[in-house]
Length: 151
Length: 151
DNA sequence: CCCGCAAACGCAACAATGTTGCATTTGCGG
DNA sequence: CCGCAAATGCAACATTGTTGCGTTTGCGGG
Image 1 (cartoon, rainbow over the protein chains, first blue to last red):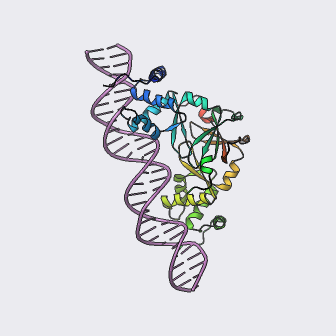
Image 2: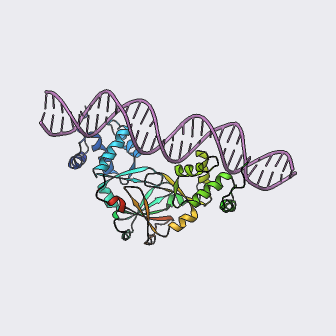
Image 3: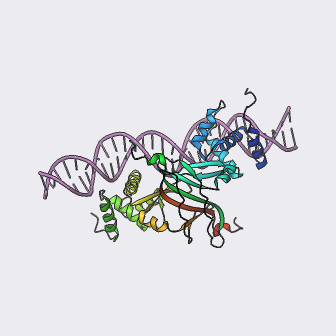
């Protein structure tokens, strides 16, 4: 029923999913497409909105969770928690790009901003500890929320 | 009905609450007591457990949230989010002690370890941004979870 | 010492997020 | 083209956090 999909990146996501060794389904391709198109990590609600915005049918909330879990499990996506306590997901390629700088999280509006400064080198760990990721997280109030006259 | 409470720190918490300019209630004193006695930030469920463990009546869940909010609002407590996406609260004095070093979070068992190294200085922020807290968060696998032979 | 008011509390209900069970559909290898 | 296992959709549930409202209580004033 649907005509040939105009999205050019659909084959890229398909290829990544196929290479990861899991089944290539329409849902996974669309979710990974959205993750790649996003400029910052998305929570599940934002993803539902972007998936429903197309002329395609929306993906079930539970299925979305499971798709994201499968993408995380095979290394195509990363899972993190924002200051509001909500899980946010990002394509693993985008995350690697984000590892090069520092994030500023506004404790007021919840927004995330990228600072230019480089993160410091990781510290020495005790014996037996294996280093995973290093996150230099700066919290405070962003310029918009710092305005003194807010009703 | 209750005899003189044996807890020696109850007056300390009362004094802090009074100095903060909010009403001194039994609930606030008990919650702040628990926060001061805790060695690390507590989630609401852990606090409910510790409050119910006494011979005193347990505090309502909603009231506990409001008490914590009021303590945060007047600066006596701090609010953070752990890797599971749950809010954790700590007495502001305890947090200051924790700000001097780096935390290592094991992504496997969820444990938090304190490293000796000092956190690096905060970076320069864009105009209008106000610095709140800086958290240097290192994630990975702790020594216990790094053991190769786990069933 | 008693009164009254506003703050704080307890209860109920609700909202958002995340999980589990199970029947049905679908990717994809044979 | 068939069939099986994986993936999906639906319903129901669990946990965490919030809102509304009537009642209780801290505490200042009379």
